[in-house]
Each structure stands twice: as structure tokens, then as C-alpha cells.
Length: 174
Image (cartoon, rainbow, N blue to C red; front, side, top):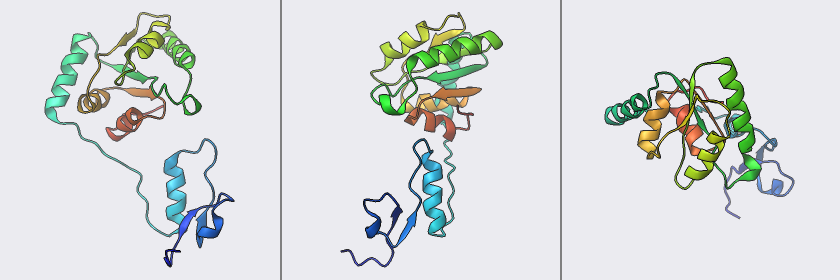
């Protein structure tokens, strides 16, 4: 209907007739970076999936102040958020179990971070961890969260904007 000479999409058995170039449909648990790259490949377009975010020095200083106030130097940031999407998130009890196992093999502190409206749920998950090396960070805005995550040795979280932020500031993500 658009008369576009190129119509690209993913084969899904519903709209295949709309495309004259199609990539394989996304797999159930496939990361979107792989999905987008596959479409770029069939279009013969270079695809760069790296996003870089450089926190401002004022936010780094504030994050360092918060971390120092917690008495922490090296830490793992944990965000069990995305509570509204039970289909695409790891359950809370898995985060508590993983944190307990991490505490058995390392002395590194785990700092649970939260997003707006998640404070009680995140605190409940952190409280379920059976160790004293788990603390909860104060609620932070996006800029401060990015700076805070840039100081973490590892980030553990669900598929959320926080996970993408951790990746963009260069923190290893699980």
C-alpha cells in the first residue's frame, strides 16, 4: 500500500506478505541486540550495538559520596526490578538465592538499587538474603544511577532500563 520498494521485517507467519525482505523471527529468549543485528544483516547494513554513556563528574562525585557513606569500596549492584512484567523477569526468590550464594564465595558487598515505586519490593528481596553483606541504596535519579552503576564491579538485573544503563556505562552485566 505504501509503494515502498523495500519492505523489511521478521517472518512471523502473520505479516510475511507485507515484506519483500525478511529475517528469521526472534527466538523466545533471544536478546533484542541479536534480533536487530539479524535484520540489519539481511538488509546488508552495518550494525553497531554499542551504546556508551559517560556520567557527568558532578554525578560521579555524588555517587562516590553515597558509596563512601555506605562504607563500601567494591560492590555488586543488584536490581530485581521490572515487577510489573512477570513474563519477562527473573523471580524475586531467585535474586535472593543468587545473592546468598554470592555471599558464600566472596566478601564483596551487594547493593540493591531501586527505581521509582519499587522501594518496598526491592527491600523485601534484599531482606530475604541471608547475609550481612547486602544493603539497599537510596532511590536515585537516572543520572545518579548511571554514575553509581559505573562504580560497580558487576550488575545483576532483569531486562530493564537500569540493565541497559549499566551496560552503557561499561559495567559487566548478568
